Image (cartoon, rainbow, N blue to C red; front, side, top):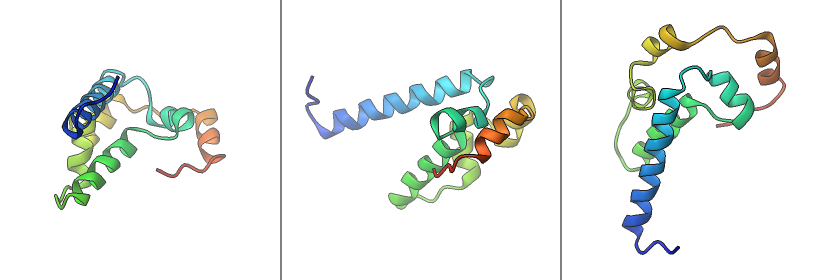
Length: 101
């Protein structure tokens, strides 16, 4: 398949982003530390990339605003509802690798 235009490419990429965002919202049982350990990125990374993209276009965006786009609610609310204490194994795995996102 050939993507016929730049606009089509951007629309497809945006649709893929929305699907990933929605999937991560639905899978609140998957903890960020587990995502970092397995994939090298988490919801916070995605929010940071979103904010950086906005700023690259000249659009100011706060860290909290970007996180709310990814989490679908304020970050502190998501943490209260869904974040669990990381297991010793997950913390050790995280500490043993360098995650740069």
